[in-house]
Image 1 (cartoon, helix red, strand yellow):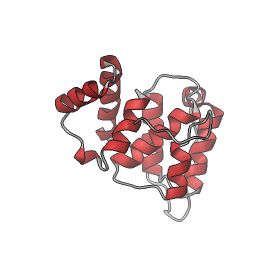
Image 2 (cartoon, helix red, strand yellow):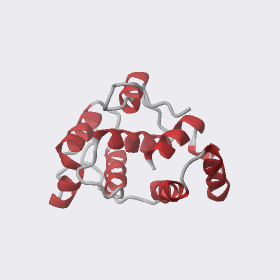
Image 3 (cartoon, one colour):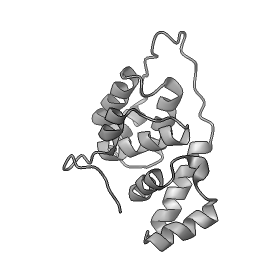
Length: 154
């Protein structure tokens, strides 16, 4: 599923440039992706368009402190939570984007969530919101945890 998400990011500059799901399914199958992975990726992507309830922080000047519920902390793991906090402090994620990242990370049902998968989730959340990370952050999000090499699918 994550290879498909990276492929979509690399292939379609904006989410509105993606074809409708039936056409996209055919295109992804033609490229060689597995049908089950395609279905999982499209179902996961549909969650990006669902509204996430967030409570506004008291002031935009002070970043909100996120307290993770025990199931969230267990599912995400310390490394993922630390990375989310890093992105908030770096100004890449606002509170609404943070909550969407957490919600989409929990939808993966993998515990603890590996950092390389969280990075793809962050990238896709920003992509879905029409936000572009700066080049240094983009490099960080696209580097593979295993070998620090960029993810290139084609």
